[in-house]
Image 1: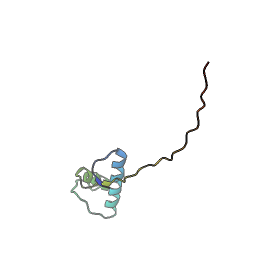
Image 2: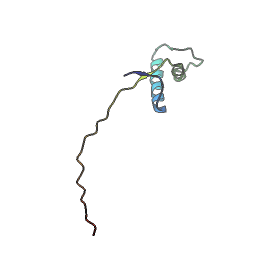
Image 3: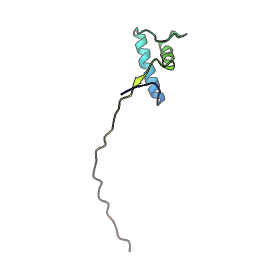
Image 4: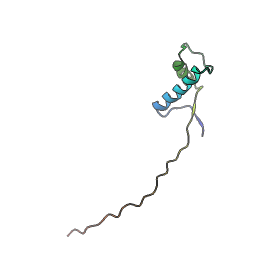
Length: 77
């Protein structure tokens, strides 16, 4: 697992920003100076500055192998 800085989707960006905003609201110090006092905007500024990243889990989805049903073959005459 590695720390990612680039976001592969808007959903992931919003989830990282929301989690960081929650940390800021709970008393965590800001990592960058921001013109805003709102935790949501400060979190976005931190992400833009490259101070906040995320860890993308390496997940591999294993699909069970299921035997395909036998397809009957018809002779055309």
